[in-house]
Image: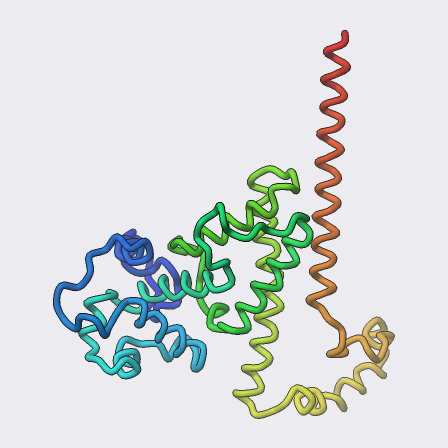
Length: 279
């Protein structure tokens, strides 16, 4: 049981499943630094960097305090002077990778301006997140339902909201736009990651996998029991079709329709107010 009363994931794959107070201290730099143990060599930054590298190369399951002590050339107990355990470390790892695509300048005054058009902002948001998931596929394995918000997570949300403000939507709707885009990207990224994992685990390529099913599928199509499936064109399941581009364009088109609807509503409201004022 976590300190907030929630059930913690035993394998450390749920953010916010450890000592939330300690995670927040470490994320925001308010925690006390170790007073004993190795001085200059070992730092929290080095520990998090090593953990991300192991997760990128071998998956989240490979990340353990023992493994990190080997990577860093130090005793396992030395790590615990900096971070309580894997659950809290995961909070730090998540905030680290969420901050990678963000501008390095932390001064809002000097930070690069987001694209002037909200459509371009959504496009950039989606592509950046997809690239992040490709570089860190272990992100798809963790439960982020209760993320401990650190500086990078908040800064990313701040930038996204700033870029989307010109849509003229209500605040809950702006958050929903971000959730919708991220969910779409995560869905496609998870499908791709699962396909790659299946190849590694079975030793069968996608082509070999479907070739094995071909005789059965051909008989099924000729049976007449699946007329819609049998009528599909030969390129229906072609790998050349870009589902990401198709889906992203449709999402943006849907948001455009909503923005136009809200704009029309505001225009009607202003017209009604002016008419009432003249009476």
